[in-house]
Image 1 (cartoon, rainbow, N blue to C red):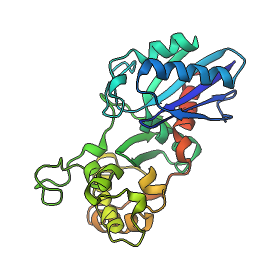
Image 2: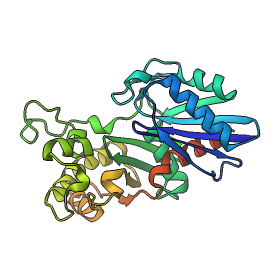
Image 3: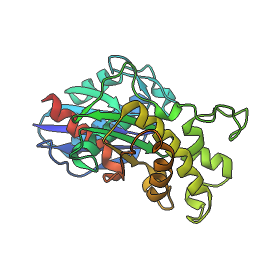
Image 4: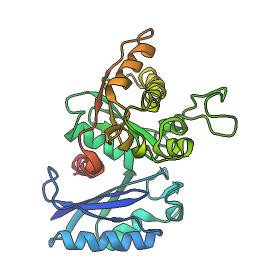
Length: 279
């Protein structure tokens, strides 16, 4: 019997099969459909093409806030037409297997903890900085418990609204995400030269979010992923570390900060790790 791992993003969906929950084979990638029903159909077709044996179980990472029982998406701007659909049951019926849903950032962090930059650390925090900003705390190799998930990108940093102006929500996400930078600068982040001073400014803003992470979660290591971190050009790790040490050092020691290692497939690795914990 095989396992199916899947990552449903706002732009792309990835599907792969694993026989041993140690590795996965070919990754099928396609544009995420507008509707959950079409998405389930395409995931089922991809899964069928990847394996011949019955499916034992399935783990799926998906954007947005999940319901308390993790059976559906209850809120997400990119997948708004997927919300309130019984996604876990729909996938279970289509694939004839048990299905577990988890937030996509949480699974990417779990993947880094088990297969990537976070190996060997008891308390790891993963932050992704791409179109948006997300994060998760991983403790002893397990996604930390929460009442409604983790959304560090929505923490308020620009309290008096002197940086972004009075009409913009003063959150970390609005300061450093790719979509926010594109809105402020009028060009996509990948069009901005690496030597432009904005990259150091973004590192400075991100370091303040990391300061809150350190003070609230007290991790051994912080792993950073997403296109704004591991892309080209990018927010440079050395700049992030320099600013973080400057603003955290007067309170406590800054933990190790590392680049993620698993790239776009981090969520698939995390889905594999999650299934391994449930077998």
